Image 1 (cartoon, rainbow, N blue to C red):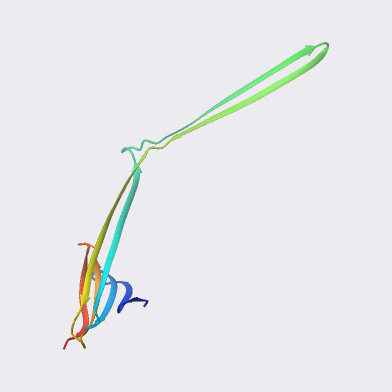
Image 2: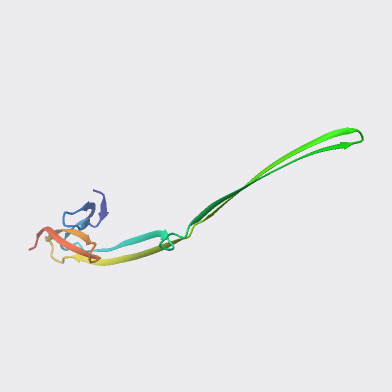
Amino acid sequence: SPSLGGGAVKINTLGEDGLDQINRIQFDGGAGQIEMTMSKEKTESYTGNSCWLGCSKESDESTNDESEADEKVIGKGFGREQKVKTTLHVEHTSQKTKKSSEETSIGFSLGDDDLGDEFVVDIFFDKRYGSLVFETISGRSA
């Protein structure tokens, strides 16, 4: 696992109890404090029809025009034929979008002033309450 400095190791696993394990921290007594701030952001987006039956409409309209003409000019005959087809496609879509986001930021300090003390702590993020849960994995205190 990559080190985060100060004895912190990033883990990134999902616990069986529904908690996201985000860090394992090891710290020694007399070595100062480890201070961390963690942020988690949740964003949701929903897109749907603007009304119950869906306000979307679509239509096609076509026209066919044909014309022919024969003319004589100074003894010479000319013929003309013309065909025009026009298609109009109209589509109207009406939708609404709803977006929401929330962010949780938590800071903490871990430390022990006594030389020789040592602790290993796992930190979990509880999605239900938006808070951190600390579990002491091992430790030694004089």
